[in-house]
Image (cartoon, rainbow, N blue to C red):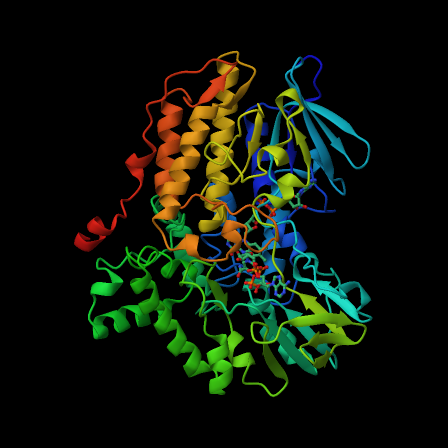
Length: 559
Ligand code: FAD
Ligand code: NAP
């Protein structure tokens, strides 16, 4: 500990940072969290737009690490709303007395590795400098808001709101003409509520998305009690699942393309009746691999839109046409499509008529001025790398992480990147993260990072970093697995396509949570081979392909 303030600096006080702090404390490490916001919560602190809620069931989308915590907390709805998830995280902070080691309203601007001292120096916007053996980024995959570069945005005279930085006091749109830009999950959740308030709501749509119903409901006591009794099985099931969810509907044991029409429709209707994200993403082995399977499922979605939207022209505009189902994040709705049956809601297709400019009193689309008192930007995030690249992270020989990632993010297991010793990224690029129930992935990463730190301590080691060759092999494996899917064909944020100039690299690992976890375990059991400990490399025989389901077309045909 000589010459250092702490064992670890943790950046961010969302699900990741809170659990990381608790875990390290329990293992006898000293740690401090630095958080830009004035309270805990992360995503659930910032995204306070109307209708914000999780789209993975709350019993699943919650910490599993403490039995008493999961027994004492009662979720009030199937999918908790943002205020309830925030209250939950505040409760966690209080229950485990976490706030005393969190510095709020402070942004980390720079993190620099000191090779001689083998310490990180972390500098903040309040001119504080902390030194620590480890620096752990819990900065979030979806925490750098994307403000679109639309001409005239600054000239708008009304109020501009961004979903990812919504005012704490809320917004009342009563009597207002509102224009919303974007039709991703945030827009799809907020549209029905804004539509009920506003005098007029105009949605500017560039790309329609695939949307499944949430079928949210208040959680009856008997169901809540049943969940509490079966938490052990639910969490075990999450560990064995490709999406880290104990509630994922089992995969249909046939290819989507091989089912007769009646069987296919009844299977899809069964999934539709349950609703929610995790029932669809892995429904069929060929869904994410074979365009014909995706088209068949996509057509089912299209018919559902036609059935829910009264105006056939509007319905056709809302049907996705340029990407396969699941290749952009599926959205989950409560009353989204019905909003377009209201007299005060309009849909504008920006593919037909793009935005010309924003002016003081509205948005000019083609030759038409859409008048607006308020503008809502639901335009997404610089996902997975945005918040990391906004920090000036300097590793060995002053190398910048942003420079290293200039051609695309590169890591070993999404946890570490060569040249940046003792720097961990929770749910970093190259890990399953956003393709899973994030809380499961966060807990797995936190436990793993803590395991690495304990291993190092037990060996009297000081420094660990990814070995470049093994990192390259991991990235090649990531790419190979992604190439077998339809995901690579979509202009999604998974691939950086939503941010002008961002390198096109498939960012999350798509081999499945269960496979990823098994790979991590193999590496740990082999003494963390693939990681250099105090500069020493060890042979690493771990086969990344061994746990990943094979998806070659030939194998799919016999599935
Ligand atoms: P975050 O919650 O993003 O927290 C990161 C924190 O780091 C933030 O508080 C930020 O202020 C802080 N920070 C970042 N940079 C700095 C810096 N330089 N200095 C200081 N502080 C910094 N996932 C699911 O699995 N299911 C869902 O239903 C789901 N719903 C979502 C809904 C919305 C609206 C959004 C935006 C995301 C959703 N996600 C969902 C993903 C969600 O981000 C994760 O589930 C999870 O909350 C991430 O937790 P985290 O702690 O890793 O990151
Ligand atoms: P998003 O899915 O990236 O959607 C952003 C929307 O803005 C897209 O429709 C995009 O169009 C549009 N857009 C961006 N720039 C534009 C421009 N210059 N002009 C016109 N349109 C523009 O962002 P999000 O809705 O905030 O969701 C991000 C992720 O957060 C989700 O995928 C999900 O993982 C998570 N999330 C989850 C929930 C939930 O239900 N629990 C809710 C919100 C968010 P293009 O598609 O054409 O780029």
